[in-house]
Image (cartoon, rainbow, N blue to C red):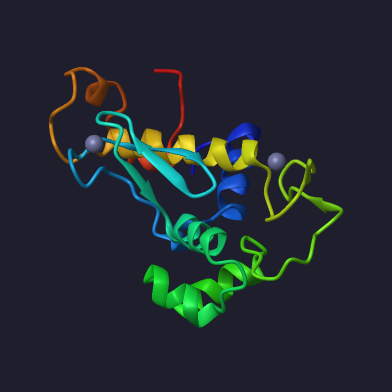
Length: 165
Ligand SMILES: [Zn+2]
Ligand SMILES: [Zn+2]
């Protein structure tokens, strides 16, 4: 196998640590097939038409904000997210159903202080930017402005983030 730079290794480590693929992240806009860009706390906005969507975490958070004190079963019924997935989010401390505060939490990637969850917003956003780059590369419909697909082509794009073409 080829040489993997330390930077690439670090990036891979961050991706493995921050594997949130089980949250049903919206990749493409259901209206226009544009790339959905992460806005924070489970919210995504289509970069082409501005349509908003939420991943499972965003759905549950919104529901709990409107229905404080809801049980896992109620959150599941209200959002369509499975109870198993909700329990996983609780375990990951992504969701707080009870009002217990988590003082002294630190981002598992960079060590910054955080109020909830396992990662700071910066690390999570960085991860999403990589997913969005990959989504642009593999965009299924050719409604893009020509050349951008060419720049990123080849080498199973999602896994490569080399910039030295
Ligand atoms: Zn759209
Ligand atoms: Zn961080």
